[in-house]
Image (tube, rainbow, N blue to C red; front, side):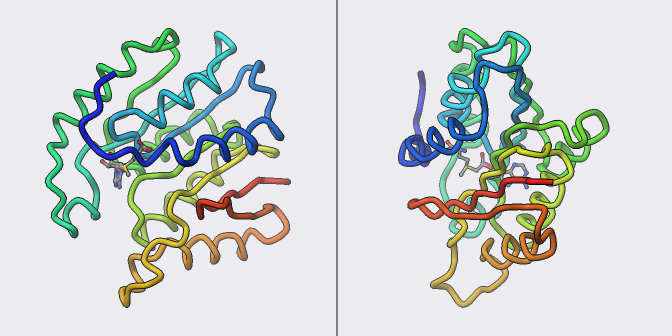
Length: 201
Ligand SMILES: C[S@@+](CC[C@H](N)C(=O)[O-])C[C@H]1O[C@@H](n2cnc3c(N)ncnc32)[C@H](O)[C@@H]1O
C-alpha cells in the first residue's frame, strides 16, 4: 500500500469494530457509504470489515480537492497524488469490485445515492468537510439514506471547540440534527470523540 500523508484512521479501528459488531452481521449483504476517503486507509479497513458478502457494496465519495481544512490551514497536500494513492490502494484489495468510487462533492454524491438507496444503507462514515454547514447537510442527507438499525459515524465531533470560529465546529450541527430527529435516533460518542448516530425508527 502507498501512504504519503497522515494516518487519521487506525486510532478509531477498535471502536469501529465494537460499534459495528454489536449492531451488524458483517456476513450479511451490506450497503455502506464513506464520505472523505483520502488515501484509502479507512476505506481499506471498511472493505475488510463490511464487504464479506459478495453482494455487499461500499460507495466512496470524495472530491479529492482537500476541503476547507486543506485550504484554511494551507496544508501542502498534493491531492492528485492522494487520489492516485487511493486508487492504487483499493486496487490491491481482493474485493475492489465491490467498491464504487464517486469523485464528487459529498452533497452531490449523497443526493445521487438517495435516488436509489433511500433508507437502505447499513453504515455511513462521514469524514469529509468538518465545517458546521457541510456537517449539517451531510448528516441530514445521511439520515435520509440510513436504514432503521443502521449506523452513522461522524468524525471530529469536538473539532474546533477551542477556536472562536463557531462555524468550524461540527458539534453544534450534529447536536442540532440529533435533537431534531429526537426519538428516531440514538446518540453517543466514542472515546476518540467521534459521534455515533443509530437510526432506531
Ligand atoms: C481527513 S480526510 C479523510 C481521511 C480518511 N477517512 C482516513 O481516515 O484516512 C478528508 C477527505 O475529505 C475530502 N473532502 C473534504 N470536503 C469534502 C466535500 N465537501 N466533499 C467531498 N469530499 C470532501 C477531502 O478531499 C479529503 O480527502
